[in-house]
Image (cartoon, rainbow, N blue to C red; front, side, top):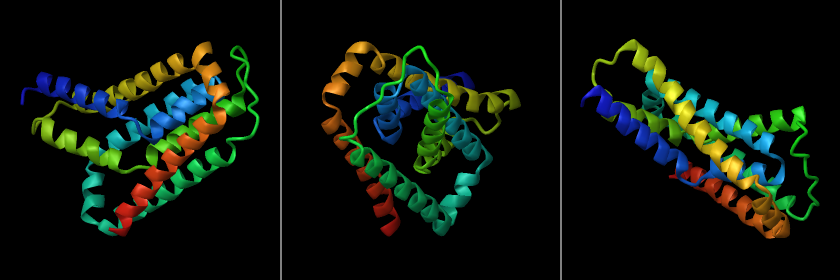
Length: 209
């Protein structure tokens, strides 16, 4: 496949992959609604850097090694599943707790770092993402790729991942969506936490199989 066409196809695939709802979307959306716009953007940054990590791993061929050693891959999925379950449980458990809203104009460094760390850990909790990147690279990249293009691919992943979740943050942190969230916080948190937990259970079920 021509390199330019391959890059366009990969861009489309990465964009569609980022837009598919999953634990990353749930976490960024809830952060934007419940904490603040800056915290949501910090979470988006965490998602972008997590995507870069997976892209680099895939380009280095390490995911092929994990796929060839089921025990290692299963261990990663086990840790990721337990992590998603714990996050889901924390969201459900705190559904009835009153929400202390951060000022939109005041940056709380602790909340920003926490949002970033949670997002990065959530992005890295599902090794299937790295396998998806590896599959896209393997099927679309020509046999010989210029070094500059290889180095640019993780940057492309970052721009797409961060750009999408930054857009989600900007939309959901607007006054109207935040007001709707506050009105239905208990049930919204219960649903979001349950979905996060179900995604964790799915990873654990994959390990059991």
